[in-house]
Length: 247
Image 1 (cartoon, rainbow, N blue to C red):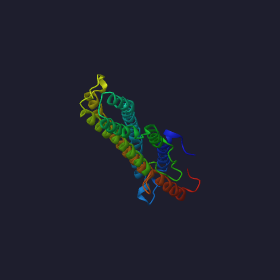
Image 2: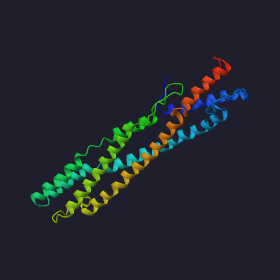
Image 3: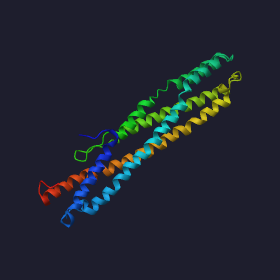
Image 4: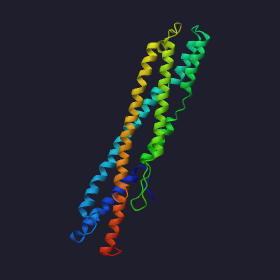
């Protein structure tokens, strides 16, 4: 049975460590012809496993925090844009100016970003049940995950650029000069300029997490060199050398 969520990959590492203890108990009589399952080779592989598990754990929180900070910054945008529209309509601007401003606003509010779904799916896949080392391995690093991240990043980038275009457009309208501090061009510009670094931070954190997961899966599940295959190969050798009932 697969292990439950966050402990899955860690349990696979524990199984490999248990295998190594068994190998070491055979002493000098354990002498496989295949160098990749020699006791020293298994020790080297075992030493590499805990660090790759920890590297994923270390990368999860920074990514989640970056996503949450970005989302908190974007949450007020749609309501702010609606207020900007109303300020434009109420300042005496020309009809064409109002129409153009509404066009920019629709683009901003029309961007559909389901960040909670994207974040939950990504975190769940990071910590979902790991493949037991005694079963057929699978990797949870997927092409779809990269696409989902790229689409999410592009959606945020589009909102940022369209918001900046709206602010620039309003700055050219003489009659747009609201008394409300957060609707003034200076405040809107400051807000707009604060968004891209937050989006970049999510991308940087994602890359770190993705690389950590890729390295973990390589160490555990790579064909021929991962812990899964080495464990199976070692078991076959032990049965051939010590009998089918050997631990």
